[in-house]
Length: 148
Image 1 (cartoon, rainbow, N blue to C red):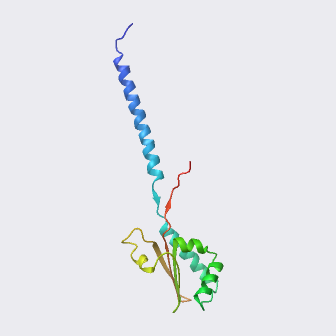
Image 2: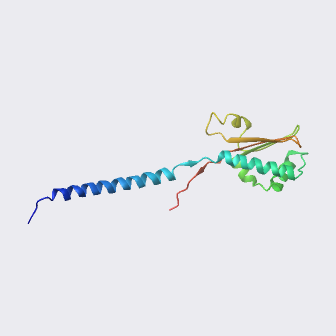
Image 3: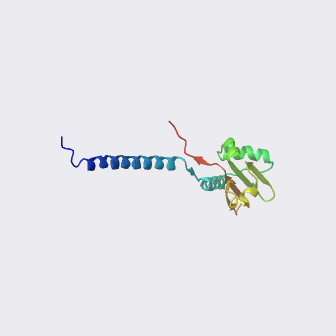
């Protein structure tokens, strides 16, 4: 039996196992970092909803005699899901002297959204021809759901 120079082979096994551990730790850390982060789509959701409502109000003439009739026509004509709007979004439409509000938050939360991260992200626009102000906000947070 020749046992000379076997110490080098034994130290290589330790380095090999250390290398495997580092690769495994890197994979675990990468999967954890990828799957636990929230997506920040609230401002994009709000801008998209504002664009959709603006197009709907320009193309369709929805009468604003009373608020309940406008709400029914608004959801139907603009093809918006009332349940989703009421749970996740803020919609504020102001005509000349009349207002329509729907959704989760009040307008002060839009003004304070820069100071508090939990408030909805809002966008504003106006339709000059019809003298309509539109403000929408989104509080719909997105997160990757683990499915196993």
